[in-house]
Structures are given as structure tokens and as C-alpha cells.
Image (cartoon, rainbow, N blue to C red; front, side, top):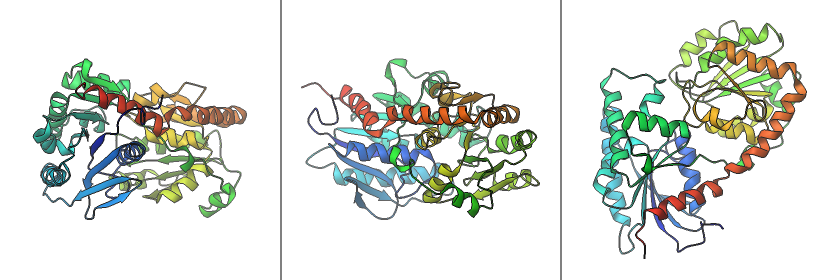
Length: 385
């Protein structure tokens, strides 16, 4: 039964430092925004985040604060106290039933509200974001300690994959009885669209018959775009006509620009969502070469567009991909990525078959289904009446 409408509606506060309609950094914006929109079909949902203007969209009430700070710790501390004041403005004669915090950024607000019915969601860890390395800089240790504290004070924690669940348990010794695995979701219709593939390829100077291999994501060490760029010559040794596109913003842009010199790859930088959807549907293969990946929303986006994927055999990617059925899992090396791409290009019929099977698999990740599971978690911490 649909638990979104089975019981009395809840008043829910979602805290996230980003959303797709205000400040946007990575996959956290998609995860929190679309969860909020699915919940808001049957519940009263308020979203506390960065920004300068309050608004209501898709039945979700957005309350914002424009923070400041000389570093990420001060910035998030200011954001916490600003959003805490905004929260109290709306926690009036009808108090919130559930407070849902996402990642570490709003830990100070969480601290002051920990006596309430609070859920905390781990979408990643600082350890994972640094490529499974312990950092020596002070910010790494500050953020890691905040992640630990959030897990301690929450009544219930959720994680987006079993890999992340084990990582959180190993790093922060969080009680496994408090941890629930709830994956991310997808709005399939956003990515399954009809486009003129030849026109999109022509726009980028690519022949319509040339295989286009796409990477989309943040240009960070964790996401491994350098691994993909290094794999391109090994792919071209077997398929001379391939072309590659790397799209996304991040600190590795200049390094990747140098690394791409002389290779058949275009480095686009940040692109708008509309252009990403065009490129995704024009691509022949999507690569996700992450060194660490708690979940990997790009996987669901590629599946929605019926695209065959080559993924690193790590984290949520490894959990969710069934090898040779919904994708190809390979070692997180240039050689591994090249092998996976060449396997597809050598077997075009299998490439199409895997893409179609993946598109049927993604139906299990609709946001309404994910929201149903989250409501069960919410209700597990509410006092019984």
C-alpha cells in the first residue's frame, strides 16, 4: 500500500545546504529536492537551504538563508544558525513532526534540535570524497568529526548504499541498529526523451556514425575523470573513430585540459541540464569511473535513457549494476575502463540489449517508491498513539 497517503499527513522539515532551485553543487541537490517533491504530494514539506528568496514550488515551501564565512566550516556554521532562526519561524502552533538533516553542513542546527524527531542521511563521507584517503588538513578532521556527531545524535540514520553503510560503521562506529539503507531515486521521464542524435553530434563536430563516449560529473579526484581521459588512447587503438566528451565543473579542469591534449576528447566544463539531456541521449556509451561512489545518480540517469554503462567496480555502482546484464563493471583503472568500452563496441547487439535491460531496471528507483520507504523510517521514530 502507498504509505505516502496511508496515514495522517506529516509536517516535515528537510535541511540541505543545496537544492536544484537555489544553490547547487552535486547529486545531493537532486536527491533532497526530488524526495521533498514526492513527499509533498501527501505531506506538508518545508525545505531549509541556502538562497536569498523564499518561494513555494511543487508544493514544497523553501526557506532560505544567505550565509557568509572565510572558510567552509565558518560558512556552514553561519548557514546553520541562519536556518535555525528560519526554522523557528515556521515551528509554530503546528510543530514539525519530522526533521530530516542531509549530510554534515547543518550540524550546528541539528545539535540544537536533537531533542526532536530527527533523521540524518549520509549521502557520502569526507573520507570517500577524498578518494578513500585520510586527509592531513584541518578541514578534513573538522568535517569528519561533524559526520560522526550527526550519526551519534540522530534517532535514525539512512545511507544510500550498503557500501556506505559499512563505511559509516567502520569510520564512525555508528550503531548498525540505527542505520537504514534507502537508495536515491530518479524521475525517468526527464532523461528518456526523443532527440536527433545526428544533430547533437554534428553540433560538437562529431560524425553521426562515430561512437560517442560520455563522462558527466564533477571534475574531482573522487569521480575519476582523469581515469577516463587516460583510457581514451587504449580505446582508440581498437576503434579509431571514437570520440569522447567530458562535461562538468570542478577543480581538475585545468589538469584534464593538459591531459586531454592530442586526444579525441572535448572538455566542455559545466553545462546546463537541458544540454546534458541532449548529450546523454546522443551518447553511445556512458562511463562512470569513480574511485569512490556511495551511490552514483548518473547511473540512474544513463539507465533512464537506455544507455549502456561502464562503471568502476566500487560502492553503490557495484551494488546496483548486474555485470553484463545492466552494465559492465571494471577495475578503476584506465585499462579497465578501456576494456569495458571496447567490449561494448565489439558487440553492438549486446550494447543495445544491455541498455534496454537497464532502462527496465530503473523503474524500481522512482522517487515515489523511495519516498514511501522514507516515510516508514519517519514513522518508526514517532511516538505511538
